[in-house]
Length: 415
Image (tube, rainbow, N blue to C red; front, side, top):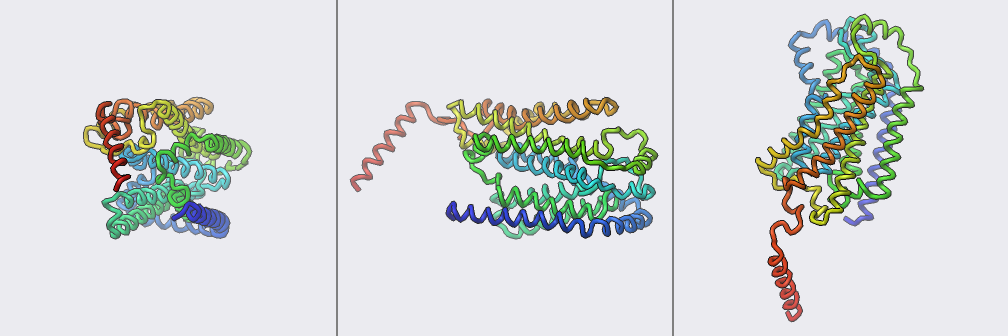
């Protein structure tokens, strides 16, 4: 397929993507109120009739849409797969969370158990539309499916593609339904989240297709002069939109605050309503840190002539148990700054919570995990051997090979 036909095909896909997003955003208003009210009725019955075993089952299932499961899988992807694939998955995880909280701030829709706290007395705050678990589950697990079926062993067998697809769709569906059983979201919220998650997956794996970029193309995407300006503008807009919505979007939830304070009197202030939307949305700084960590990593590598930077994207090739063990050991210190997020007390001022607990810890972790980590692995030769120029040859062997190639070319002239 020619470059022109590929460009035309991508333009068509982008057009379909925008139409899809417009349709699901507009149609959400049609079913929002009806399904929300219906959810209240249904969730009352669920709570009254569900056994302890059923609730326990859905409590387990719901974790598959949270950081408890997604982050360990993502760490394995960083260690086992090329850099562009790791970056693609990080973008999907972060952006699904970011867009969820932008929309939650925009809609300001309560979660159903706030309307009727007798359903389930859970200490969780923030707005509910769309469901973050549904968004994350469908975007992440469809992306994971796409990654698995492109592994040579599975790509040759069509039935594996179907089996994995059915499995991940069912898993994502049950994660979404678990939010209903636990009275954390309404039907309209999980449907909206699921549809947005499918859209985000389609955008990354079928439109921009970062996971298929060659080393040269991916590095240009990160450090190219024009691309860098676009990324900078994009990140500034991400931050501005988040803060402007937090600051100027007015939502009067006094009656729900009263319910919340009775149920969870010790819950930290920064996790309530608009403040919660800002708090969770600041995860965008993890993606910004990762991007600029990669930027400096690629920049330094290109300055060092001993590396074949076209192959650095495939740093994971030729893995064995010993190398994987070293990579894992080296990776652990690079995510230690995230500990700040967990150790800073919840009773400090909101400024410290936002700036140190979230922004600083996420940004530094992104820089280290996607910058310094890859650089150290490559510098200490814990990577694909073809990254290192003249890896298996001394100077005499290189000269001999050059002479042999020259002789073969001269011989071919007379044939």
